[in-house]
Image (cartoon, rainbow, N blue to C red; front, side):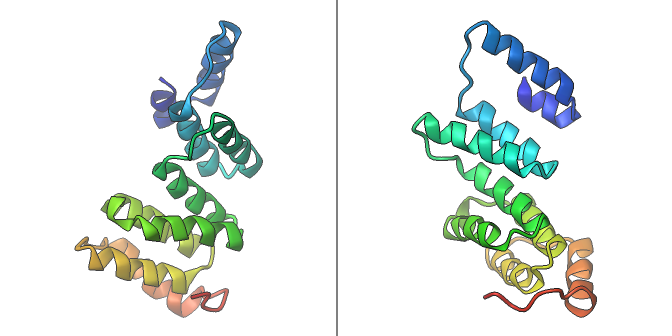
Length: 155
């Protein structure tokens, strides 16, 4: 249900549901927290996303792979280099689990954060996996290499 609210961006309804469930004694699981981490990350609410990540750890669970996509996206967009590159390292190590949409999401966020060279390298990984990069992303990446380069190559 939380995932459905996230797709429609109905945060008020999601929070009301979560509070109601908690009041009834329901404990949220990793799947719920994972959706919320992604949602908070998209809104660039870093502290809130990290608190939810802590809740996953408190349950003795390793964050699901999808959470690392969310974290990389969030940290890259807000230019938190160390954490963005940590999350990216996890994604690179398990790149066989990434589909074309996930690759593109990561590349877009790297460009947005000014990690143009890293984005270009990740595009190479995407193409090596046999996925086609969208024309819009190709053009944006090309333009970024020329006009938006804000930081030196980190890899």
